[in-house]
Length: 276
Image (cartoon, rainbow, N blue to C red; front, side):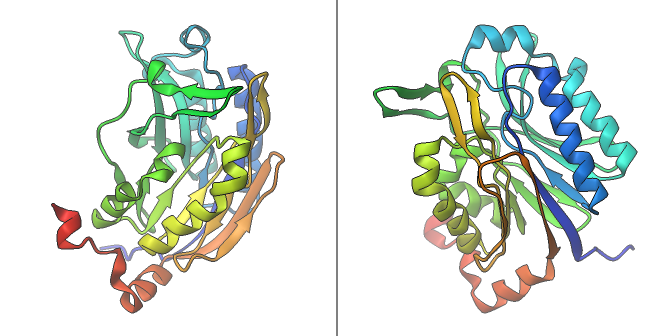
């Protein structure tokens, strides 16, 4: 039986995705290749990597069924070509009934889809008079929490607004996760106030590595995102962080740190109250 690997180089891709799927694909592949050239073993991209839009009509016109999606298929081919694990933080996918999903895909180094996760918590908020979001009117929400096995451990999947619901992450870690993905497209107002604090909190609460790639810049006439992609240790230390421009960050990860920290502080375990 092969011994589980303990060390990897993880990368987060920060993007400024807009409304053109083809342009977004070119940029995504460019940064994935840059991360590969720097030795990345696992690469995570932001939420809505393939297209940023809150127009249901525009999304239905520019998205595809999973089996026919050119964005997804190109990234699968790239993962195989570069022999790298890629977590598409999320892309927008539709089904035969024209329902839209905000969905994460874990793609193996052989180019196979290992698992997928549909965003559970819809971003229905009124930030200010000029800025509000109603994702539940556009997307069908997910119902299942998802973890999957990687060569280095188990990763728990989430997307953006999920970040504000800590019980989700407790369940992910109770299901064996020692890494957590939080791809996002955080707004600038909420990002400035809450992003860094919440990312560090999820790492500390669950004593897990957190990979949090983000959208940045002006994505549309009505949407500006915060950026500041982060990789955080199970002790809550920020190992790598970006600011407000597209690019990549990398960090060398030793998964054995998780078990060492959890032996010291076993608070990640669900209590009898949490299990009810």
